[in-house]
Length: 217
Image (cartoon, rainbow, N blue to C red; front, side, top):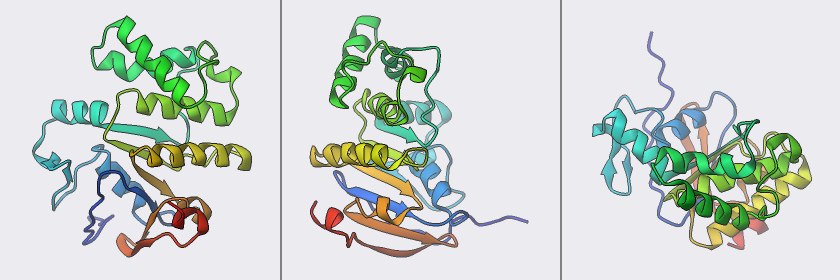
């Protein structure tokens, strides 16, 4: 028996928006995140990324879209423990075929951007949870993607580190970056300018954030 994870979902996210997609476990928000990130294809309907229909792309094209146009930040950081922060940030650039000198400069600039220019040679085990997530954000930014997609990025962080990482997303949005944040926490979602709530595979609401933090941006 087929299970419909999403039903009649229709939404548009403009360039430069800061959007939170919120919902409880099993609501369909992770499936929506996978589609937005070109990790899964919808069984029906269309998904246009920067005007391109990704449903007609083959795996090679999809891999290039994921590597060049989308920056991913995950709850588990997904850093390689044997590599320094610099080498972790260089990875997507290496996959893109950039030469070593160029990717080193790009990676250092990304780490500077997230406030970790003095931690380039530290391995993940030598960094705090908040610093590891900042490395993950730097890695996502290294390819200068059109879209920054963050899936429960504060789920493994304490309150101080959560504020630190969310402040970084605020800065990136203020600089014009498109940010889509997946979360089940209302206080995290309301840092965005717009909150889309998913329930039982459908969009339950789509509105501007009502908190002072969200309303101020």
